[in-house]
Length: 223
Image 1: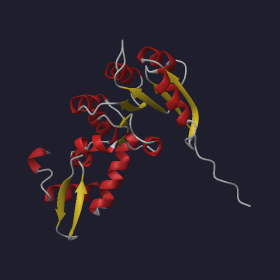
Image 2: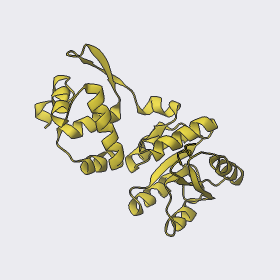
Image 3: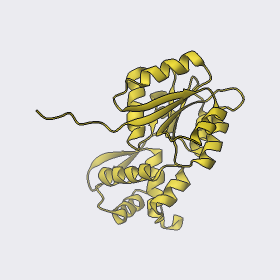
Image 4: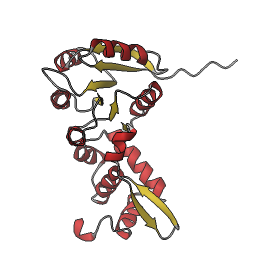
């Protein structure tokens, strides 16, 4: 009889100032199949203190907290731990705050009213190196544009983030340079590049450059 494949475990830290919600969410996450160590703290100051002594794969960070809100906490964390995966957890759909948070660098944005199935989906995607934005937020963030590829006679949909990565590829920027420019992890940039290669049917960066040039995404004057 074959033994079951053991899933890699991920440590998750919940940061929220509401005890009932924080403790309930922590308890729920423990039933996530990939859950490792799951714990919680009540605010930004406590988060920064615990990060000095322990490492966490994913941090779920409340946006609205007293004393030090999610934005300020994220700023300080990015300075000290630039590669930390952080998913914002909030009750509000604030486009201005969302853009500010993306500028600082987040791995996802979810609302507190989502179902557990969506929460585990978000955790899975972030654990695997992707970003996750709940559907209401995704409609704001990823406004798809349609690109017609004449050679293949089909429609390719590229979202704003993929186009940004494509432009960086065309400028011959390295993975690390692209990650720094777009506030992404290196692994996320690599996954976006793989997605672009598959969607456009390109074999390498040269192929992506020809695609972008032909479709008017970049021009020779931009390079």
